Image (cartoon, rainbow, N blue to C red):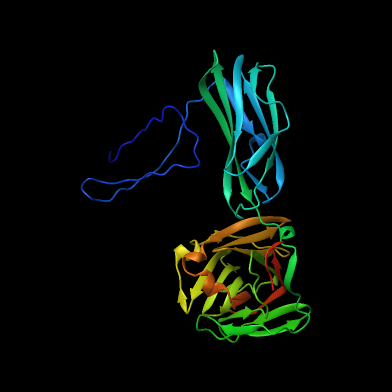
Length: 358
């Protein structure tokens, strides 16, 4: 009903991977949904916590990690508990399982060893739920729960096959192309870094590495040394390209402290459906690294700060580029600067262990 709370009771309860709402109007007009919420009636006598209240835990595909939980009660109650997982995940209880009688003086401590499938896409955030069913005379009367979100995070350790590694101490045959109708900056190597100098005005270039991209999943890691401090452009880019008119690259603008992505095919720039929208707030510090990971039709971008990789964006470029189109594109980096000099320490390309590579 328009402009009102629409409540639907699902009885008996169901376990499901997701909820989809299909809407239609008899008069053929449009339908808008402001919010969708799922609720259950919980037992006020029981409190449940997963991982000591952590909001997010980073995990690695193909690895295992430990999950802890606790259940407290202010009254004696009988319960049954379960850890619900995303499809394809598994959990091995480390502590006792089954029905438990709770008393205020004896909180229940729980532990599981959870296995993450190797096929989980990087950047995916998924929920784990601890459900505690309150029982009376063997019948379930309430379900109390807590949710832990886990995210499949990037780790270069999982990409162990070297494809390209340039510390900018020796010349390499990059294909350099100007971008945005701007002249290419002056590029030279000095003191173990690639130095880009503005060509008298705002300058931009794409540097395509002289190496084929791996057939499977791979990552491009970029280590900036310093930025110009200028405005509005003080940017680095990294990803995959055939040249300035065919590319998928994540970018970081040091002046605005933002990160997004460019998807360009045959000279045409694609919008949010291919780039995933804009923008992520990013604060780069000396020593931080950027990385992108290509997997099928998706690129994720990451920032390494303090030894922890943080997801910046997910770029669904496969909506604009077919696998056949991108097959011949190579790893690539880029620069765009308005004034001054920008320095890059290293570009590294690694293939995921077991992926095809050249």
